[in-house]
Length: 105
Image: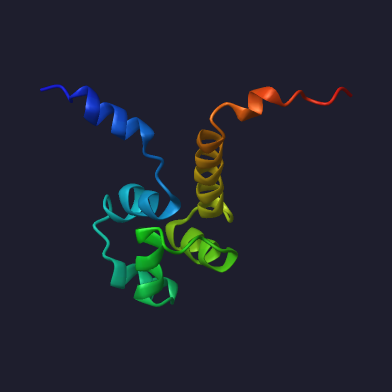
């Protein structure tokens, strides 16, 4: 069964933040729950929940804890956050960048 064009369009428009990717790419495949991960990385469950909900952003400390726990390079989760932030900003500019001429060297 194929997805409707509305579903495909809304999927395309959605830009996942670092917390969403933490869940979909790490926690769900490993069947990990928030309290277990929070305890393992020594943070409050509420802080991890806020990250997943998108109400808290990745900072250096949380990145280091998550990166160590999941065996990723330092800065991995911050790069996910930055990448999502840039895509959101670019979408919001809606072509305005095209009007800026790059400075000649």
